[in-house]
Length: 147
Image 1 (cartoon, rainbow, N blue to C red):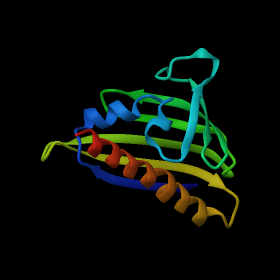
Image 2: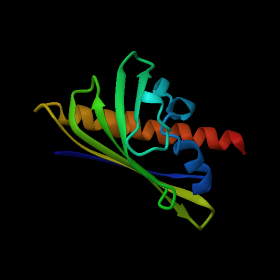
Image 3: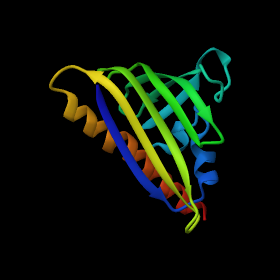
Image 4: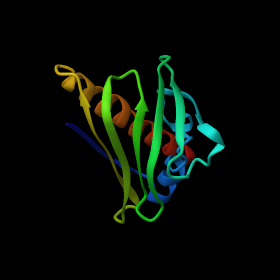
């Protein structure tokens, strides 16, 4: 099992950051790699068990299932059902913690998955830096622009 962990500090209150990422169908609004998204079967985007189907700007299609969502803990957990990345048993959690000194947010995004031998480092780098850090950097820019 491969583990990827990325953390960042975002100069905005946790409530503001959570307001951007809570919508399981809202990735295109803040993540630069996502072109469009929709929730399947007319379910609500905050309903545990809903499935989002989104397309990447590079043309890839990914389906993910919402496993947990907590407004109290500012966290969501999801699994990948289908992806061109070549990962199996992929489960990720995005969690925010308020930093009271300066009203900032400590953001953590982690994942565990299996993959074919020899692909571990490339996938870890792509997920950790491209997906997770890329998302954090985009959130920082968007929230800075809103001030």
